[in-house]
Length: 293
Image 1 (tube, rainbow, N blue to C red):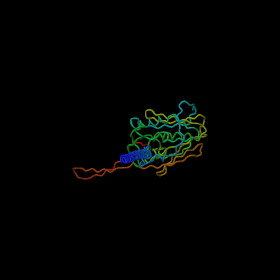
Image 2: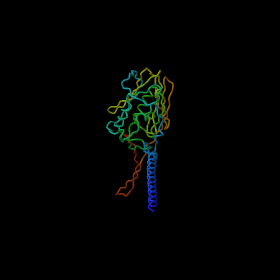
Image 3: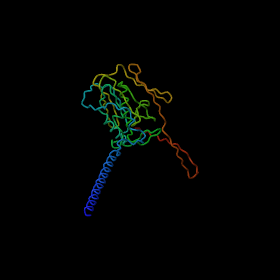
Image 4: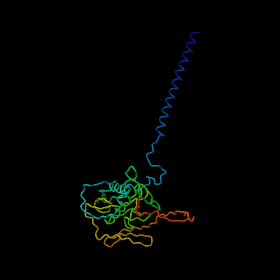
């Protein structure tokens, strides 16, 4: 009888050990499965918010990165252009200076494309940009980077005179004053770029400077690529359309058109107490000091 009991207890003990090992194996299996699932499903968003108006994945073509060359020898002055701004407008001035710092002494090798947006980058607070007037639709509003369109427009005018190929250019939706109407080049991150191609046989360098309300862009080259013949920039107005043409030695080689809208007006209502009459008055939001991105 004792032998039978001893055998029964031994069998029971073995069963308990097997069950315990099985449970331990299940726990380990569950842990491994949980770890694998966690690794597989956990993601870190490093891209933009997919609900933004302009998706960064849809920007213009990314060209070869351009680098600065402050020490290189570029002895030939090909073209220059100067515009003016109100330096007492501190936020706009900050934006212009910030952009000039990114562009000054930029080298564009022969055959390469200059992209304003790619070179300057996204206009953000962390990038040093402040709020100033920008064009949004048919009105001037506060926005980050206000004023940098004057930089892109100044460069546009300089490279026009250097007889370089204009690849992407668009006008503002509203009238601006720092260049002749029809001669501006607006930019907006992920929406509108300004681009030109160095279609000459020489590397060039952009010298962009600003001081006391004066903004200048000069194109220098390693080789003498001065255009053969006089470069003339003409802008003609026909109704609401401005047509800019560039001719070299009397032959037109570039044409672009522009149209501008009038700044949005608002209607305000005032009541005179004595007569109890209501007067409707229209006022324009357009300001002479307002500028754009």
